[in-house]
Amino acid sequence: MKQFISTQDTTDINELVHKALEYKASPFKDKTLGAGKRMGLLFLNPSMRTRLSTQIAASNLGMESIVFNVGQEGWALEFEDEAIMSGNTVEHVKDAAPILGNYFDVLGIRTFPSLKNKEDDYSELYIKQFIKYAGIPVVSLESATLHPLQSLTDIITIRETFKEKRKPKIVLTWAPHVKALPQCVANSFSQWVTAWGEADFVITHPEDYELDKQFTEGATITHNQSEALKEADFVYVKNWSTYTDYGKIYCNEPEWMLTNKKLALTNNARVMHCLPVRRNVELSDEILDGTNSVVTQQASNRVWAAQTVLSEILKNK
Ligand code: CP
Image 1 (cartoon, rainbow, N blue to C red):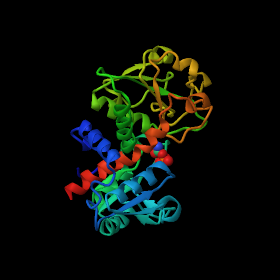
Image 2: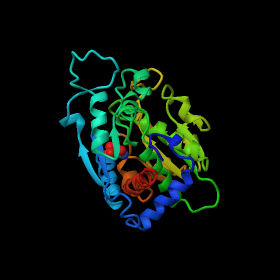
Image 3: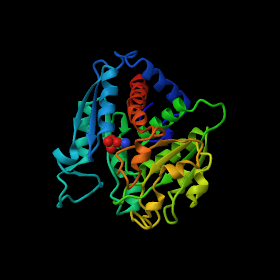
Image 4: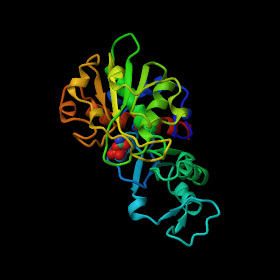
C-alpha cells in the first residue's frame, strides 16, 4: 500500500479486516516492523480517537510518532499553487511538505472541509498537495470528503459482530445536529460498504440531504426512515449538512433522532456512530446507554484499522 486516502488504495477489504482482527487478538505480533521509522501526525482540526488510536497503532508496530497540531501551533499554511501570499497564510505547503518528508517515513494528515466552496472541498486540495510535495506515504486521518480509517474500522466492527451466514442489512441514517457538519463520514461509509459488497445497504435522510452520487452507487436511498429501519441488522447514525446547496442545514427535525421505539422496527440492530456525538440531539441517551450500542467497541477498533494500514505501508517501504 502506497497511501491510504480511499477504497482505491486497497484491492481487498476483507483481507484488511482479517488482518485487523488478527492484530486485535495479538497486538504486538509485528512489534519490530516499524523499528527505526517515524510517523508525523498533522492535525489541522481537533481529534481524540484518530490521534490516539493512530499513535497506539504506530507504537504497537515499534514506530515512533510525533503529533503536530498545525491548526493551533503551526504557521498558517497556503495550499493554492501560484498564490500571492499577502494575506493570512505564512508558509506554502510546497515548502513545508518536503521538510516533513525528510523528517518522517509516513505522514498522517487531518483536514476538514470549509463547507463554503463545494468544488474546492471536493477537489481534496489539501491532502493532494501533501501527497504531491511530501514524497512519502500519506495516510488520511480524515480529509475534506472522506474518513477512510473510520470506515475500515466500521467494517471491522460489523464483521466481528455479525455471525450469521447471510448478508447483513446496514442502514445509514441521517440525524439532526445543531451545526453544519461535513459529509465525510457518510460519504466514506457509503464508499466502503458499497465497495465491500457484502451487505444490503440502505441510506435514509430527509429531502435535500442527498450525498454525492459518486459515493452512493449501489445503495438504496429513501426519505422514509421507518421503512429503511425495518429488519436492519446495523444502524449507522450520522448527521451531515446538505451537499447540493452546499454546507447548509435545511430540515433539522428532532423526529429523525434514533430512539428505542424506532429501534423496535429493526432486527435488534446494533447501533453505530463514529463519535463524538451530541447526546439527545443526534442520538438519544437510551440508545447510547443501551445494550444495542456498539460505539465503544467501534471506537476501540480504530487502533486495529490504523495498525493494519500502517503495517501495509511499512511493508511496501
Ligand atoms: N471519529 C473520529 O474521527 O473521532 P475524532 O474526531 O475524535 O478523531
